[in-house]
Length: 176
Image 1 (spheres, helix red, strand yellow):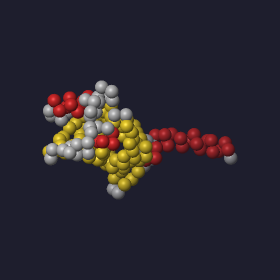
Image 2 (tube, helix red, strand yellow):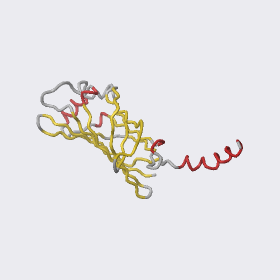
Image 3 (cartoon, rainbow, N blue to C red):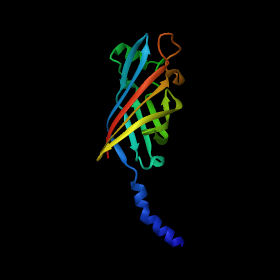
């Protein structure tokens, strides 16, 4: 009987190993918005890298990771960008990347969600991130949006004019 189990294991192992898809990110759009003095400030990050190992049928074995270079932050105003990259906000010289890594992925409503470790300025917090996954043939798109408290990560201090809440939007297009 033991030999039979080993033979079946080898026969079915390729099915379980190939059930996951390794997606190669083609484009990544990472943006944020925050209220400051009653005005919505929009910004983006470039220079991201993602590792996407995802299958809707095997969420427990799937994982999503992304990182972005802090120095690529852009809000449309150069002086503000340099100020945000400074020590009080993102401290880009000491903390070069922002990292997001899934800890668990699951179905939520008609889409997906996951608990992710989000690391900014060396501080890691677990945040639930809902997302959509759409696949057509060998192309896929992952889109998610979530809110975080900037002060939880030591980004900026207490402010009467700037909101603590930041909305982050991530869109990744990938090919298998």
